[in-house]
Amino acid sequence: MTEQTPTSTTAAPREPRRRRRIRPRTFFALLGPGLIAANAGNDAGGIATYASAGSQFVYRTLFVMLLVTVALVVVQEMSARLGVHTGEGLVSLIREQFNLRLGLFAVVCLMAAN
Image (cartoon, rainbow, N blue to C red; front, side, top):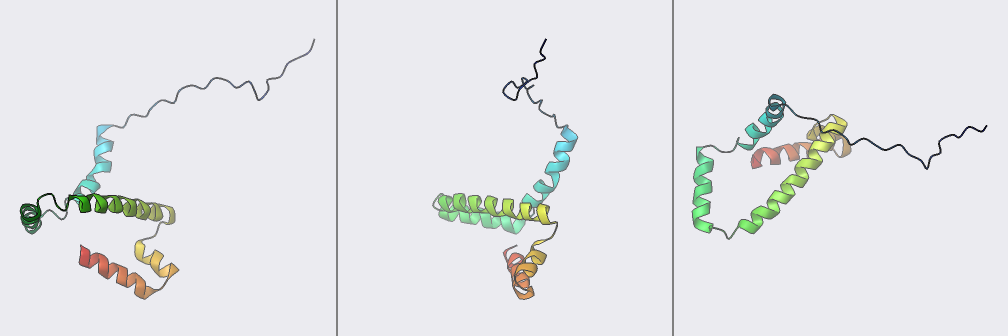
């Protein structure tokens, strides 16, 4: 009597992956810092500026907002991946690759834009 061994061509059927349920508390704990950061610029002066620009330009600058939003998402994603992978901040990464002056220039630009 010969014994047959399973070959690589006969694969066992895979079970479907079960989707993990995220509890509401965990969801809001992850969402909280993002909501706070997103609303950081919505002060009284900002809202007045947004309303003034909206009444003056109406929908003429909407295409610019779409382009800027795409660029923002790309840059934010790249920055987050760099930070998670290296465990370092923007200035230390710029200083490591280039020099301290360029890192400080980036920080000054971020402060001026913010």
